[in-house]
Amino acid sequence: MIGNIVARRYARALFSIGKKAGAKELDSFGQELANLANAIEVTPELGKVFRNPIFSLEEKRAVISKVLDGIKASQTIRNFCFLLAEKDRLALIPDIQAFYNILLDAEQGVVRGELITAIELPKAKRDEVKSQLEKQANQKLILDFSVNKGILGGVLLKIGDQVLDASLRAQLGILKENIKRGE
View 1: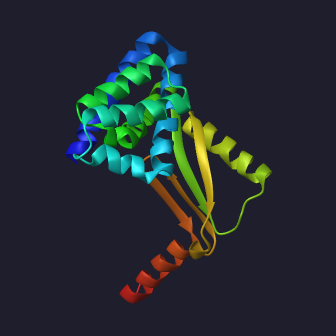
View 2 (view 1 turned 60 degrees about the vertical axis):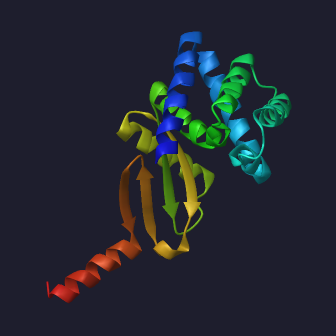
View 3 (view 1 turned 180 degrees about the vertical axis):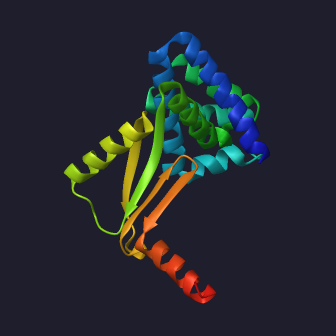
């Protein structure tokens, strides 16, 4: 929980810098953070190095510098990462990136969601569903489609903190509860 609060503060600070610099930089910082978080995710040893107090500040700075060279990071992101190294917060980069994306989505009026179906939907149907949901929400929507045979049929839609469960499994569960209660 504490790490999450700290990550949010760093994300807000970087977001504020990006906002002052312009929309292009705002997106660029987000992409660079995503690349950095991806590098840490793909190479778990990096996260271990960043969390381990045995490694000195100089060693951590050298490691993050190599990673930043690999992703061709801007000077602002370099300085940001070196600040994180000084404060021993490099391990928070994935959390910072996740919250930065939330701030970026809010700034751009984008809502993220997930649509789960029992079978794979064809591309045309996915586009049609996305278009209808964008019209209803009156916002740009980034929708991830996934398949879960466990819902048996229908759809399960998650947008933000809202969930619409129109799956056959949920309907059968409601029916079962009604039968138990004698309704």
